[in-house]
Length: 600
Image 1 (cartoon, helix red, strand yellow):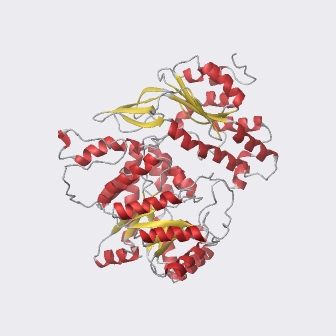
Image 2: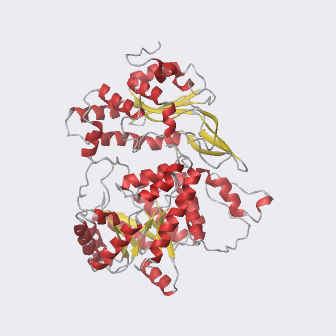
């Protein structure tokens, strides 16, 4: 069924509707787990779902596969994103033919972001220049078979050229668009004003507001920063005091977003439905629906009290404790949702939420002009290492790998990190060792109150291969250290002979099982490698071709290793720095400056 038909039916019945967005995960286990998650979330009662098309067009086959599974196997009405990026007309036609074959009757037509590894968007040979061209092609090729949606940007109403943007939107609708999905927003008054302007422009098709649940403080900041969305001061004032308590952020954030939703639905602008950007996560969306009293009570009749899952970790499961015979959902939630605190760079590769940013594209948020203003024009390796050092000391507001200032816990080891960068180890991620800090600790705490959290020390950095060989010879003297090192071309080195993940963060809470939200494992590192080096190359490309700065950064990305190190003795907070020859006391201020000789 077309989405517009479903919306008209809901309006006829006088009920509010809601829908969910998902993106294709980066790993095969993540894909299987996402399908299981979508099936569970079907019980939340979405009117339809939509599946994104990766920025750069690299996951088009995964998008098509997800649409097939959702339409054919799960029986959920699905809208397929389709972009112009890397898509000649022939590939567009194949995607539309397959969608039609699977009964998908809804398409979100977008121009898309620049292809992976490119700075600017360019038309693909034999493809389409603008989103409106894609809309016209779909209409000409398939008549009225598909409902076609396009994107709307409430934030554009703040810009001086908003009338031009509105004209573009009107032209798309006139070309055959049936409804509009909006970008996320936090300012409801701005959204309402934009909707009224859309109607004043003569656009009468349904508008579907995009709603982003607040999952964590870091995730909220990252998503808002990437999309360059205005945040009302009142919203920040409610969240910021609890930014180190993810559970509290989620609790308050749920109420904030629920209030936004109520205001939208109560406004006299004809909006009777909401589209939730789930980020492939379940709990935050469920909490928001419950706050709005939107979760339907659905009885699902099955031959067993629980359905056997298809994920690799549960495929062989055939026994569950009898205590949960009447609490099947509770048992599932307790044993599967430990990935709902995605704070670290390394999540579980089996999680459908793994690689969430890649689901929406890999890019640095700064424009070339902004990047050059922040980072200047480095001409020597010493210039580059100084930038990294300044970032660790809080003197630089961002790096390509870090959109925001260092986390508060980084201050515990900031001097050591700065020293490492001065020595040629370009650090992009880290965490200090923590041995039983209270979950309410303002620096290290997370999760529910009355708990304790633990961390193994972790370092991630770029380093030239000669210096890496010297480092490895010293690492081998400490049996408590494990490392992975990989170059841009995929050559991997490690001293870890275990195939399983290494939990580097865990929490112990009253009345709960131990939660392990952050791990390090080979498959995750291999998936992250492409993104890490790509961000470095994008930094290089903010400078003119042939310039010294561009050549320098490209050379670093082409020739350096990306390394991560875990020191497994979490009771010794300084041990991770031993192989580098960093004296913790000197790094913390008793001595500084000057050259530092590494141990032989």
